[in-house]
Structures are given as C-alpha cells and as structure tokens.
Image (tube, rainbow, N blue to C red; front, top):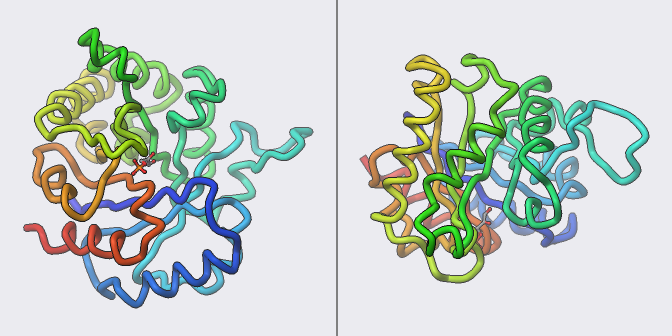
Amino acid sequence: MARLIVGNWKMNLNPGEASVLVHRLEDKLAAKSDTEVVICPPFIDLYPISKELDKKKLTLGSQNIHYLDEGAFTGEISPAMLKGLVSYSIIGHSERRAMGEDDKLIAKKVAAAFRNDIVPVLCVGETLADREHKLSTKVVIDQLTADLAQLTAADVAELVVAYEPVWAIGTGKFAKPDEVSPVVAAIRQTIEELYGEDGAAGLRVLYGGSVNPDNCAAYLKLPGVDGLLVGGASLNYEEFAQIAKVAQDLK
Ligand code: 13P
C-alpha cells in the first residue's frame, strides 16, 4: 500500500509564512512517488495554498471540521466548505479531545467527513496514566469503536487511523517501536472484527508523536504501519522532506 506522510502544522504560520514553507518544501520533494505527502495547515492558509500548490507533490488536509454542513455555529468551518479543497481532515486529535471533544462528537465528525468526500485521519491514543496502568490497547480500542460507530464497511476501507500516544506528542519522548506494534495490531484486529476483512483491507494506520528524520524509519518498517503523522518536524521543510524521502526510499 502507498505510504502516507501527514504534516500537522497546528496553530502555526500565517498565509505568507505558509506560502514560503510550501515552496521550500516542494523544492526538496521528489516529483513522482508512491508516497503521498499531506500538509494540514490552519484553515486560513488552506485556500491561498490550494492556488499555488504543486498537486503532484503535496495534498491538502484540514486540522478539524465541524460535524454539520451548515448552520448557526459562529467561528466554525464546515466539511461542506472544505469539500474539494482538502482531501483529508485530522479528526479527534488529542489536543482537541483535551479541549472537550468526546467520542460522540468525534463519531459525528468522522461521518461528516465521509459525507463530504474527505478522508478522516482519526487520531487515537492513550495518556501516560493509561500506559502506566497497562491500558493503552483498551483505551485505543474503546476510542476506535466509539468513533467509528456511524460508518459502513465501505467508509472504513478508506479510513486513516493515526495512533498518537498523548505522552509522545510534542515531548521528544517518542514511543519505542515495540510499544507501537501491539497497539497497531489491536487497531487492525478491531477494525477486522467490526467491519470484516473487506473493511480492514484498505485501512491505513499511521504513527504520530515526536517523529523526526532519525526515528521515522523504525516506525515505517513496522508491520501494519503505513505512514506517519508529524507535528513539530513538519514546520521544518528540511526535516519534513527528509522524513518523506525515507518513506519514499523504503522498499
Ligand atoms: P509532534 O510530532 O510535534 O510530537 O506532534 C505530533 C502530533 O500531534 C501530530 O498530530
């Protein structure tokens, strides 16, 4: 399966800065590759970037969506507005869960994405306390089961799930590959149990949490891992391009 490298810029870079980063990144990226490289800038950057992006090198994603297509929701952006503009949307990121998003809301957002031809990059992951209590796999399976409640097997076949242990995000304390493997296996097994082999066949699973050019290969080589969700390093065009190159060059 083609690899997927997703950059989550979080709340960084205005449109001018975003344009500079995109051009520098494109200069470093290979033109043709099986690996899809996605950037998820803040909403305000999406439209201007879409006008200048080299679509052979980069794909656009959003960092969030609303669960409805329109309505009286001051300050929100709907998936219907993003339809055609972005191909992916990060949903259920732990930074949004920490602001109060629960699995019920996330399930509605995942369904809203599919309704608007946007592929969700659904984020799941345990806290440090969960891990210390040996609950990583249980927490992730519970999140997954609740977040996918409204989907059909055909939806799930397109889905991207990002395993991002909360304690590894932005901390430099990346998860060891042997800590990632059992959780990734549990994600795949859960999807297969819920949606059958057909549903599970197209599923792509990413790892995220303090990914950098030095540690990325170890995750990409793990069975069942199809790519990476990169935060801090995606704001550095040299590092992000290096990560993409590692993914492109791996057999
Ligand atoms: P860092 O790569 O900065 O740890 O962030 C990971 C992340 O949250 C990506 O969504």
